[in-house]
Amino acid sequence: MANRAERLIHMATAPQETAVRIGTVSSESDFAGLAGPWDGLVRAMPRPSPFLLHSWLLEWWRHYGGDAELAVHVAYRGDRLVGALPLSVGRRFGLRVSEFVGGTWALLADVLVAPGEDASVAGALAERLASSDHDFADLFGLTGSSRLVAALPADALRLIERLEAPVLDLSPGWDTVYDAKLSPKARRTRRRRKRLLETLGTVKHRSRAPTKSSRPRSRRRSASMDCAGRAGTTPPASSRRPEWSSTVLRYFGLLTRTCRDC
Figure 1: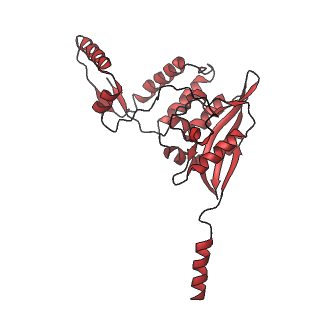
Figure 2: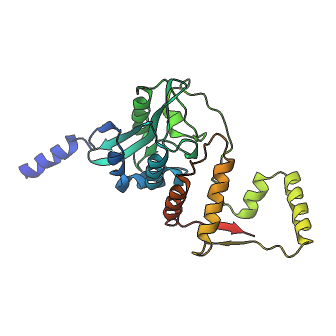
Figure 3: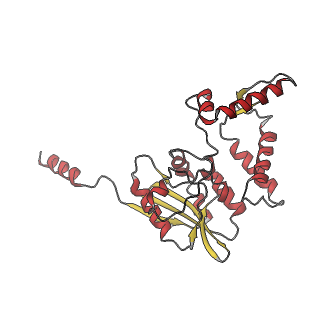
């Protein structure tokens, strides 16, 4: 009985969790070693972004990292990765600038926090960012409900609002979302355009998963169009485009996606 009581006292007084430890990954090889637990953090985001998945970030860094310095801030509780902030530091007009790995491709980027962790993890990573060696941070892709924005002092960031793309929550149903997102005038315009199309032939809509035969051509085309049209993004060097495109296509071929086809 005495031994059991001692064990109960020890359990009651021992800390429930070890303290969070913050570090910074600065080499490509060390970042590659985070592949195992990384994507679980991404999938736990309130709005998961495929452009924060580990394979995407690693390939982007290998192709476009250039002379920038990798500065991926990580949070561990014991041996478990519980948070991350994927940044790099480069020079712009003589200044050291922190930005997300992925640059303007890092849509919906944010600090990553494991399920069950509280705001202190995001706060510790934000403090590491604030104390790092840079002149300013250009954090493209943050959402209005960003955990990183909430963790930083109110006057630490100047937020420039953009469209909340590329994610559209369709869980309420297509018709409900369509009516909510488009004004009556916009819906009338689209109905008129559909009628014009119908004068040329039958117009059909369907949702499907891409087939193996259709995937490479359609995705390669969309990738090249996106690169050519994205404001503020430097298209890949011609010598790198085939390698980058094939790598991206192979990677996203592993993801299950739904597209709308006409």
